[in-house]
Image (cartoon, rainbow, N blue to C red):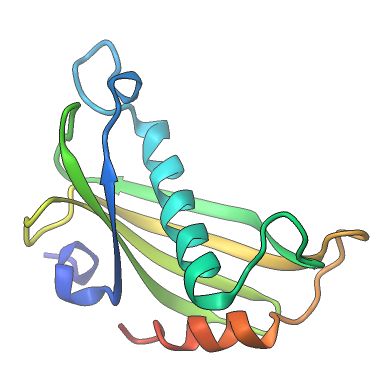
Length: 143
């Protein structure tokens, strides 16, 4: 079993609720929806713990890569837990490890990665990760 599937591999959790529109014609959450869950978990963490102001911050994160491994289906209505850790922390980029768990389950239904490059909002050029965000990310390194 991959470590990425285990709850103990993550340091931050966010409750998520499936929505009716998340289900596809096959009766389970569509694969693209997992990326929305990943984006929500990451940005909620950055807002809460890194003081990111998504409306006025001069430096923002652009997603440059993502991946997801699907292990077991989820469907509406279910309560989920999005999980986050930092896999790699660079000067201007971070690779997150993420997972989606059914509430209380020890193994993830899906897990993957999400990479942000931090850029100056006005120029879209990469810049160092802001200090407050870096501090928040360091807390999840090695989770």
